[in-house]
Image (tube, rainbow, N blue to C red):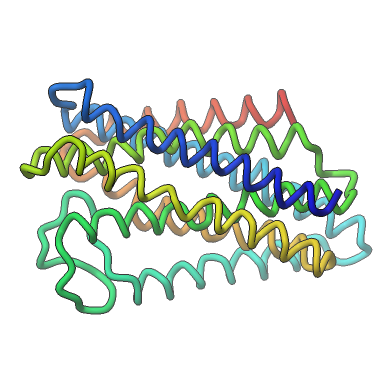
Length: 265
């Protein structure tokens, strides 16, 4: 069962990576996608991530902590802060560039990387906590905890996959606008999802090795995702004058993920 959990997490994130590639593939079929549409899609992705952070990660962490006889809020709070802090450190070190920013505003360690590479690393940063969340969810199922279910882990992977579609598009389309070939823009766009299977396998394996850390791991993934949403996804969706539409994208994304998790989990 434990080996199956790692393999299931791997398969689930192959799916989420595949959806990233589908989103990037719009560069072949669409002549152009408006900035307004991209902002709505990014807002939608942010809404999905926020809902998943609570219903699929924090809520089970609280329930598991209570079942283990500890103050339920302690593992959730500690894990959440550690997850956000970890992504903050990665954000400070990893060279990356927000979608609408000029090259002079690249963040992280100074480098001579091209703009296209910096854009891909920015979306890759989003995908680290997403892959980790899926892996931890499948690990919780293998651990046999009552608050974790296979349907819930699958619904999380499905929600992450859905929001990966606009993320793939958000990389490939701007690169195409900057003059990159369609094929190369697609390859860069799908590459941002490659980190998810790696993070998922590590997350599932880690919680199986140290099961008492599971509530902390769930909250850690939630904190990392919320950091990404607040620091990057939502500000990017609001930066081009489409704030109201992007906000409605957040609302619909949040609602969809909530429905998926409650209905399937």
